[in-house]
Image (tube, rainbow, N blue to C red; front, side, top):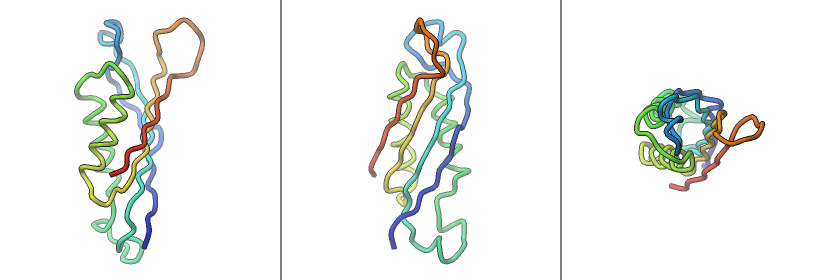
Length: 121
């Protein structure tokens, strides 16, 4: 039957990721986007939440990872999110995770640093 995608955009969390002591001490917001490519199975026909990937539960998984263990790299954070989502639901065939870090400790003016990971189950 194919796949369809479920997206969660601009999920915001306060956490303390980063390689520098100031980032651990002060913390900051991190923004996460997800696109989960899901096996269609019966969900498109039976209109039953049990037949699809529950995006509320997916959000909870992302929140637990982002606000849990501190990581030095947002690359690692994105990878851990992607792997956890694929491990949680066998319906997720591929996931794209984008992590944005607005307060980067570099001299310069920019909106944010961003990393995008794609993981295939």
